[in-house]
Image (cartoon, rainbow, N blue to C red; front, side, top):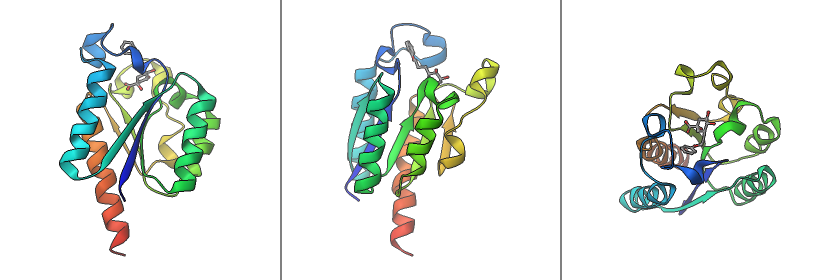
Length: 149
Ligand code: CA2
């Protein structure tokens, strides 16, 4: 495994612009740098992408399925209701870890459900942007485990 895709859903490109108590004050650009630094530390190339287009996200998931690329996904609000995104995630062949910056279970009722979680290998919520580091490390571990089998 050389590459891990870190995919981010709608509005995450606006991180740092509001709601710092929920999402922290770091910007999306800082999140990208953070993920790349974590990748360097674990010896993996990290490609970080963000889109506000559900179709584009689904295309990226298809690409990851075809190339057997492991994925860290913050589906943002799509995670609460998009069966199309869930179906695309279910096509993945390498490990998928879902991450949410905030603790979705401690927020509004509509955020308590994730339609992605049942098809993810693991789920991280409420650990802030550091949750991305945990998710990347978990993906590396899952892939290493699979390779020793
Ligand atoms: O906690 C998370 O990471 C979420 O996936 C973030 C989504 C939200 O809809 C999910 O329920 C939980 C929201 C992304 C928008 O993030 C912004 C943060 C600050 C300023 C602007 C957008």
